[in-house]
Amino acid sequence: MSSETDIIFFDGECGFCDTAVRRIMQIDRKRHLRFAPLQGETANRLLSEELRNPENLKTLVYLDVSQKVWTKSEATIEILKRVGGFWKVAALAKILPVGFRDWFYDRVAERRRSIIDKANCPLPTADQRARILP
Image 1: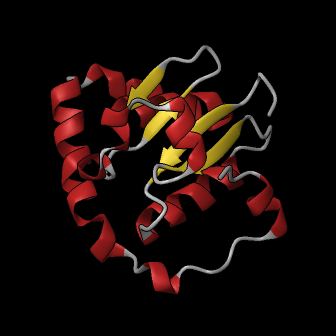
Image 2 (image 1 turned 90 degrees about the horizontal axis):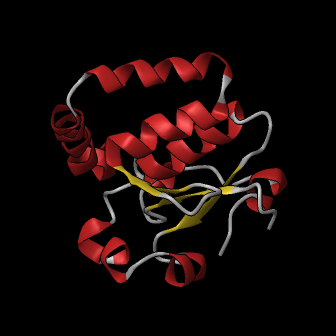
């Protein structure tokens, strides 16, 4: 893995999360980002036990190239800033208090498994599989 690669950790058993990862892959034209399930080997190696706790699987975790860890709404904003282009406008969300942003994030996260069923997710393409770490 390149030292210039950031990693997004997600719930590998969630259809909503799977769909979000596919969308991020589409907009990450410079391929700065890699992905790994919170239940996987990469997460075990790089993240604290607290972040891998089964109760925290609804939390998106973003590990940037400087090894800084971002979660929830902060992770979402930082990921979109990293993607660049039009998506940098997401930084404007920082004018909202983090408590409000995370409250909204948590409401979506609580319902994520009922929004999109994992069984309905298509298999990843070869290019997508190459960007997903164990």
